[in-house]
Image (tube, rainbow, N blue to C red; front, side, top):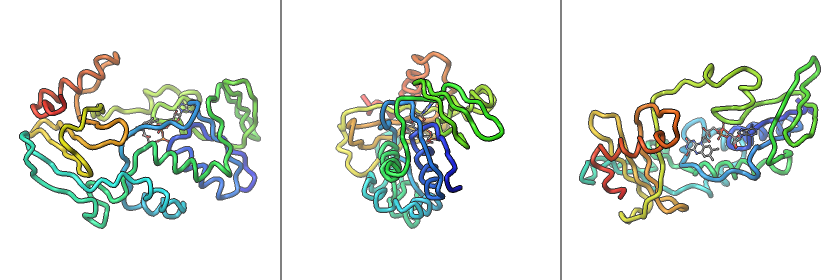
Length: 254
Ligand SMILES: Cc1cc2nc3c(=O)[nH]c(=O)nc-3n(C[C@H](O)[C@H](O)[C@H](O)COP(=O)(O)OP(=O)(O)OC[C@H]3O[C@@H](n4cnc5c(N)ncnc54)[C@H](O)[C@@H]3O)c2cc1C
């Protein structure tokens, strides 16, 4: 792989992680990210089992652990907030319901980026506008006007990858909705939550709602699942809230 020129689209999780391994094998890696800078935000990602081993082999164990949320565990509660079950982050060797290594998506992305930025070229605020493959490689035209040649181009630009659509066809051919919808929003920390999160599962409906402390913004309230959203964004965002409020519990969310 030494000297091979690889272009990766997307600098979130998959892009910088791939860049790490390609770089380690001697490739010259460029990552192009549409956003003007690394995107912050996102909820907690739990690393369990093989993911922990991958982090260790990447040499990022200390950095990931330093950026952990330090969630102590979770209580499942009934509709009145009485604890039904408790799950600790050190249950099951740290691979339990709340894992010992829990990190916010934005922090994980930052750790992966910091671990690769010295050996990888990152281009922010640009994207692939066109690409043509020939026998020797790929000719890429960027939206910003640059034209460059690569031996390999990889799409790590997310679930609705623009690169995949450009090369292989529309999303509908590849994306299958699983019928789950999550909505996240912030509420004041009226419950005095600290390192424990609480989770409510409505009997028989398949719906759940949870509250956890978030550093910024101060509180977040996820709800899942609800019916497939319609194409209008207003309906898509208001339906989970209405659905969850119908479960009785989210009066807590105010
Ligand atoms: C801001 C953000 C918050 C998220 N929050 C959560 C969460 O809370 N929980 C969860 O389970 N998942 C979340 N996700 C999705 C989650 O990161 C991914 O499902 C998973 O981590 C896989 O990551 P990925 O790197 O393959 O893709 P993604 O994380 O989706 O990243 C794709 C990256 O490609 C960039 N991009 C998009 N189009 C182009 C293009 N044409 N050219 C160049 N770059 C492009 C995007 O800006 C983004 O940085 C979030 C994603 C983002 C971007």
